[in-house]
Length: 339
Image 1: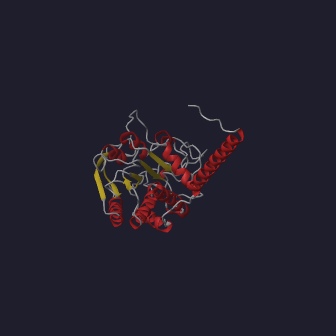
Image 2 (image 1 turned 60 degrees about the horizontal axis):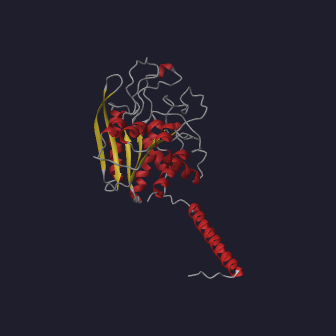
Image 3 (image 1 turned 45 degrees about the vertical axis):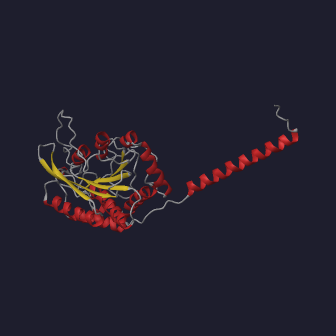
């Protein structure tokens, strides 16, 4: 059977029509995609005054050093607050050995929203404070415990406010809010180091990562907050985060950018930070990032941390409500963007 040949003019007309239809289809598809990309983020409320009050409440107990009365009182306060905002709260407690042989009583506190689903993420911060102001300009203060307003309490304050908001507007996915303990009891800077390579930092996270609060615990990813309350903070892309969870970093930084927070979340690389997220990545294999205040080309020795890190000046004077709001709203937008 022979296929009839169409007249040349008719063929051209058909081709032009098909081409125009394809072009219109591509243009419409492009417009739809552009519209999706430009849709404003749906962000549940976040109250920076409330977050600030939670930071202050922790600091008011005094330095939250393991085995101290202030530490125990703060544990009671945090547990009570989590139970106020969440029906499923786990207190994981035990003992871990510090660098100097001291057995530290610790409590990891976990609030679980929608505990029955594996479609979940977790947000965490450490709630203990440093027993040594070993980076204080005054050498006489190096054995003085610090308030840890920024280094510890700021992240917990942001997460408590998120917990409160999640109690008012239930998340579409599972969310765990985790307060990790015994993070900051590492060896003092001016103590002579031996050749022991044991990890003396992040003791609470090491315990949780090896022995989660629930058997076969799973989350798609995790976000750690550390030092998220100082004025004009910059959260650089920490290198372990980029090594283990680059897609999570990109998602969080992109959302922050859409909210207008690029000055706080610049697309700039920071250093490798041994923090709670490292042990979670290594032991649980859950991609976890660290949102941590890092300063590019910092004059703060070699650390890159903000100037009051591990000093007696890490107090409420260093806490900025605007920074708490930036971090809090970014995380609320991350949660709201999940399906």
